[in-house]
Image 1 (cartoon, rainbow, N blue to C red):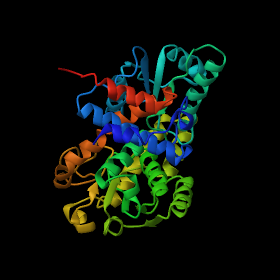
Image 2 (cartoon, rainbow, N blue to C red):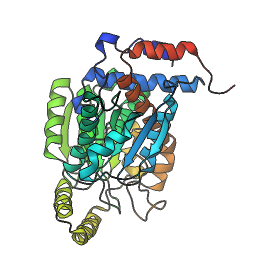
Image 3 (cartoon, helix red, strand yellow):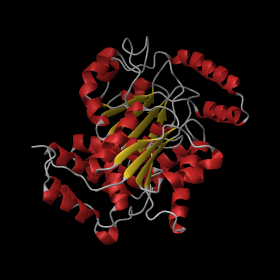
Image 4 (cartoon, rainbow, N blue to C red):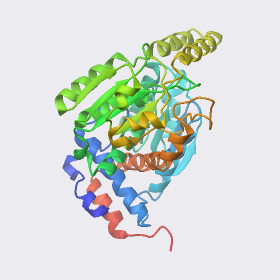
Length: 391
């Protein structure tokens, strides 16, 4: 892929709606914004594939703030920031309610990017990330910091825009462009996991994003495994506007039938997350443990929601693209019974790894588009310099 061809698709200086912006939810971005991030990620990947350094910053730091360990997204953030020349600082903890504004500002004195991951609590997690973004914006307005860092949501209770836009770009690469995704059937399905307490961010984010580009989305989940109500409404509205479709079914088999893309992933029901949020607010940690245990026991009723070779045969020509925000829970590899069999996982592992490999480029593209007033010129300058990473 010629990076110069993709650069020509980027917005002009007067059209860059992402300049100075943060990335909190994909549905707050325009279609053009999303395409610009996806294109930017494609350019950066093409440059690195050609051994050209995309270094953009001569100095500066990027600060990651994870409320709990997420090795995959943590590595992606570090890699994407390093790609642009930023030094990584890992705070590795959640900020206290009384210190969010102060600590976020102190982290921003020399920072060009803040990556925040907090996904445990309904509504509170998204508000926490937004408070960080609002705090640094206010500090810039007051002259406390010279430049506002780009704040990236690396995973909340609502959305995971880095993951979902990386997935969109990966699908676009596989099918010859975002425009070619229109009309393709994609199955987003709940899958069994012994963990059972994952965030709703990825399934909700996928539904909200791909329905904007005319895809025919089928959501499959057992009874009771509901998402936030807004997720369904948003997907239905997007599908109507884009000419795609959105439907809900109660079996993985029905969703997989003739699908061209399948995303089996475990998530905790919205009602569980609401209850856990209430217990946390009341400082009832012991009851949270009991609640999580009860959920895991209830999930065993749906232990057959597992992707098998037979299930994959039901997809279009038996060759659907399998996607997942790895690491996955894999039967006989990471657990006794999981989201997919070892045979399915091993057969699709190269694709799963390539999908995950888009995340650093999306992160880097978000930062560059936010920090550069004229992204087309910035990308052209990087490509024309042609500085080799190694000789």
